Image 1 (tube, helix red, strand yellow):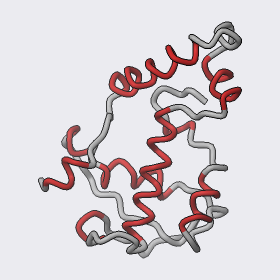
Image 2 (image 1 turned 90 degrees about the vertical axis):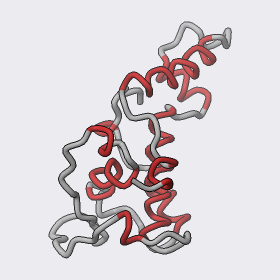
Image 3 (image 1 turned 45 degrees about the horizontal axis):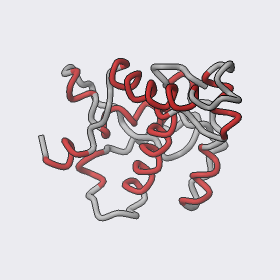
Image 4 (image 1 turned 120 degrees about the vertical axis):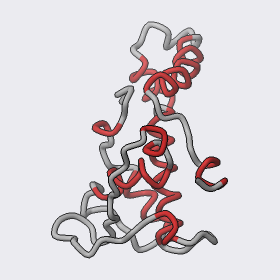
Length: 148
């Protein structure tokens, strides 16, 4: 296990994510004009996203940077490209079988399912276009706290 893999490991369990989300929930509830609204509506009114969704989108952006060589990391140390791309986008990654729960929480393991299930409408041509197009994707199936 490399130092880099330890650094990019983030909150994985539903409990960890819920604790982080709880801070944002508490803060938005303190705003007098919004305190009677549901959390998801408060986020919409404030133009915010849930912290879990923000983390997922940042993970996808980081994955894009690694896959397309925009940062100095060897893509082959983190991902294996698959030649089977019958549906969706052409930049699919191979999903390895990982038995260890702790290892499954590493960036290179947890992002592959989300990456491979991105719709064909996602634009991979440039980073800004990719960023704009993933902002339009519904990621609710991947969120543990389901706060959209």
